[in-house]
Length: 369
Ligand SMILES: *Cc1c(COP(=O)(O)O)cnc(C)c1O
Image (cartoon, rainbow, N blue to C red; front, side):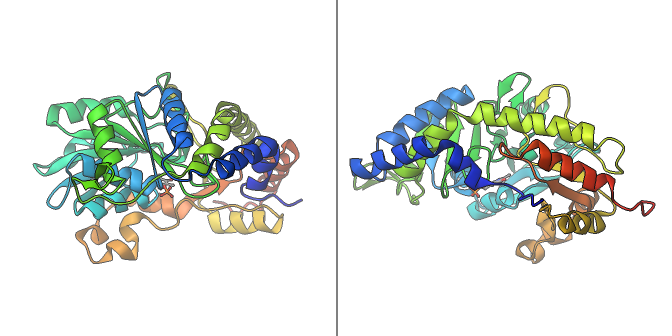
């Protein structure tokens, strides 16, 4: 039996008539950038997140970058970031000229340890980016309390957490602004690149919208040195179809996670442990194994594709080697990069495939680790 890490073809197959109709509607309509599909998607996604505003942009990295820009963050500023994350979180900060200041995850999870944020604050700190990693919401309230005391902005990197709930409310409207990615493999994925900024702050939304469109609010009037980063009509039309299925598909992922939890009980793995105030959407199902290399090879031999999110910590990447961050001491983050393994999860994985994965993990020869 073959188990792909994620089957995007199956996602299309399930929605084919609706996706094809949406694409045909855009093609025939003749408007491909800045049109009615993006406008409708923005309203629908803002409502879904329980927030007032949504601005479609080119991708998740740009969403983060445009939020930071709209907050006037730049050279000389520091932004506290999750140490354990996809590098885009850090790159967005670096792109503004500011410096990312990493804070490690807590001892039991993968998300930023809210209790360690205060110690990372300096007179140069301007904002905190909390990543809802793997689909699990970060503990945002204590971070907002600390940020309020120090007049810092709080940004959610929600690129992996569309629909996840923190204390009953969806990610996206919980802080000053949130960045979403619609990269195809995300829980809400387009058929190409896409992203969005979600916020309750009308003025911030307007600044992001202008900056993403050449610094312009009306055609050929350019008030700031903007960029071109827009969600296009085709992607927006497809996302509108997929948004109607997001809750159902997230629920399927949640059921898969529950089956994994039962099926992997007793295996010598650390299973993901969500706090009781969190309703994760299981973008990834990440386990920790001291024998990861052996386990991954064993699964591959049984036809099971796994991935590592992420094999090299951001501060250990060549991109940061020449900066002071290259020498940062982040032991928990480094340990995670050596032990995490992502098992296949998604709305279209079958019960037989999950059973095969659990049986294969259980059949790993015991090597005493
Ligand atoms: C995917 C992702 C991004 C970047 O999104 P893109 O659309 O690929 O630019 C940012 N942060 C996290 C945590 C991500 O997983």
